[in-house]
Amino acid sequence: MTILRNLALLLAASALLLPAAQAQGIKPSGGRAPAFSAPEKPLPSSRPSSSPGLSSPGLSSPALGGSALPNVALPRPGAAAPRQEQADYIVAVVNTEPVTNNEVRARADRIAQQMQQQGASVPPREELLRLVLDRMISDKTQLQLAKETGIKVDDGAVDQAEQNVAQQNKLSVEQLRQRLAADGVPRDELRRELRNQITLQRLRDRELEPKVRITELDIDQFLRDQQKEGAPTDINIAQVLIAVPEGAPAQEVEKLQQKAQMVADKARAGEDFAALAREFSDGPEKSAGGRMGLRSAERYPALFVEATAKLGVGGVAGPIKSGAGFHVLQVVEKGKIGAPGMSVTQNHARHILLRPTKQLSETAARERLADFKRRVESGSGDFAALAREFSQDGSAKDGGDLGWSSPGQYVPEFEQALAGLSPGQIAEPFASRFGLHLVQLLERRDATLSTRQSREVARNLLREKRLDEAFGPWAQEVRGRAYVDVREPPQ
Image (cartoon, rainbow, N blue to C red; front, side, top):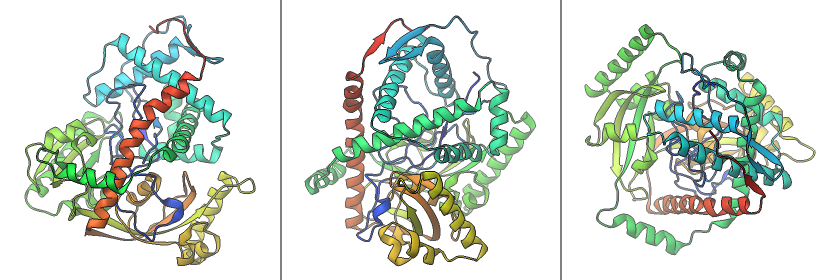
């Protein structure tokens, strides 16, 4: 299979404030500081990164709080030809399900090509195959557990995920299917992978979230550690992404590079970077002025960190090239995550939440919300009135109004929807662990965190850290309960 473009489909959020007047259906279970899901190392025991990777044009916003995101990739025209097929054989059995050599080889090829595309060091082939097999065994044990415990993903959720893949690659769903078919990838294979990844996400959410508790003493210690001399400085980077389509001819690539250079020149000449991002960027954070949020350096791609390492606040780097296109970067802020006085971009939104039941399937709930969206946009319905009548969230009495929120306040899927909206726009219906949402962005502003809000940042960061720590032992426990017979090493 030729190289695939890494795509993250569900969303993400940096961990910030959760105010008292929060909506019960979209509380974070602990936000995760945004990260990029470039497969830095395919370690089977590591909790999967849940944010978009550099190889996804337009996908550079935050990551799922406490969950794994599906990573799906598209064929890259002109990539290296697949390895010559060899006689297949079973390399492992997980309970009664086999894992074949060709399955492991195909997955390893995709990971290696993604890593090469993003400039990461690829492990030796034998080690990579071993790591991939280990990860596939762990995933299979978790999928079997999800099935046993009744976790199901209906076709509506997979349809939405497939649409997201197409949209992020600037394709229609039909064009997406044609692209996959041309590369020998059946549509069913994509949908099966999407369904599996959403299932794993929901299982991990359900199993891990209740295990983590953060006390006020924990927060006090975290803030003390942040103030210690030598504690790492966090950075806030804004970007303008000029996306390069897959397989673009050299002439088009050169034209796009010139466009990126023009943006960089304007930024260095003192033009407002946020305005440049809103005008030129292909990234989803463009409506937030390109800002990706204050986070630790390890939560940014190494490419970004290296390019901005010697810059002060306000410094501009680029254009730099990645698998997604050309990036122009500006250092917005350097400081400590959780420190009072941190500058953030806040959103004022409202939403309608429907919770699937036996009487209301996930697909039916999605269709109902899509109808609400059509009615509001056509002028035949009022968002606030629909929220008061139908929403199953605590904000219903206020017409779905959630007030002002900081990045990371809500679950990642909600954050991603907000990041892609301009004031007044309504997102397509989407699912989170709480149900189906219809969200409208009302206003956006820059604000400074108070001491109380900073403590919520610390709470969410600690929660995310402990979720990461809990994932490995939990995954090993699930695997330990399964019958695993590793027969032959993959080749």
